[in-house]
Image (cartoon, rainbow, N blue to C red):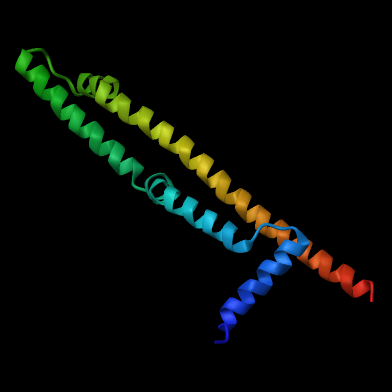
Amino acid sequence: MQKPDAVIARDLRSEVEHRIGIEPIDQLLHDRSELVKQVSSLRARYGSFGTWDAIRKTELAKVAQLVRAEKARDGGKVTEALIEESAHADGRYVDQIIRATEERAEWAKLEDQIQAINDKISRDQALCRFVAAEVSLSR
């Protein structure tokens, strides 16, 4: 039984990659795909047109409602400024901000890993062009 063309091409590509001494593109693309899966929810939340601002405002509004209810229950004077200040200082809101900061840091690390793979692929392409040019010049 003859191998399909795609398998022959993959085998040939693997042989050439090995001879040139570059990482297999299949492995690089697999690694990149796994990183993109990990970073996708962070991009959706914190990236352009992400949902972070809406999430933050919703959490702040929920905390403000709780603060308002607590102040009203205690019979103290309740002003909007006091509610806003208390909501921003509330541990639940502060925890959300801390968590978001940690997630943004993780997002940056994942994006850097993805870029490193992209850079490696670009470098390997340049190496392949160099080797091809070198072979054609030696003839």
